Structures are given as structure tokens and as C-alpha cells.
Image (spheres, rainbow, N blue to C red):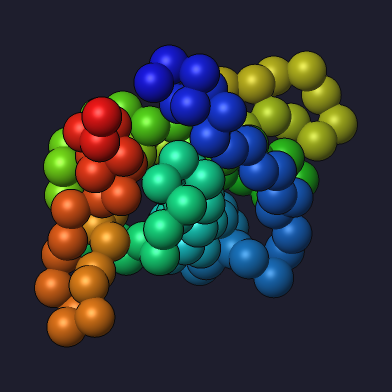
Length: 133
């Protein structure tokens, strides 16, 4: 499973532009949460190869504000896999676009499920495959 986790780890980079800023002249929180959910979704999908749906976000910690002229790296990694749910840890780092400073600015966990034809959570195919002799 470790190889599968490693192969599904997802990294995405974004540049913070003036049109993305809030009234405090920092990155709008909703924008970074959208980016985190997108990376978490891609990570979960790469691991399961199923249609995944976000059902829960947890422990979202805004550690520092994200300033303009910043490059943001969003990293998603599988944290835990259960028969019906998969948990993706997302870490966000910000680095100065024109400098050398880089620091962790956000973290959170996103929970996903796969749904059956009745839109109900179903056991992940991954668990069915490892149970098959």
C-alpha cells in the first residue's frame, strides 16, 4: 500500500495574483480551500481510481496569511484508508515569488467516499480487490 500512497501523492503550484486578494490584501480563504479540496480530490481519485466525493473537512488550520506575489504549493497525501472512507492530508506551503523564504501556511484533512448508483457511500473497490483470493 505504501507504493500506492506514494504514487497518488499530488503536488500543485499556484501563483497568487492581485485579483485573488481579499480586503486585507491577503489570499482569500475560500480560494485556498478550493485549491486544497481540488488537490485532495485528485489524490483520492489517483489512489482509488473511483469517482470520489468530499464528505468532510477537518482540522483546517490557517497558520499564516498568504501574501501577494507568492507561489503556493499544495500537497495531498493519503493519510488513512478505511473500507468506505479515505482521508487525505493536505499541506500548503508559501514561498516568496522574488525571495527565498518558504513556510507552511495551512493544513487540513479531507474525507472522501465513493457513491453507489443510489448515491449512497459504498465500499471502496480497493478493499474488494485486496479481499479477493
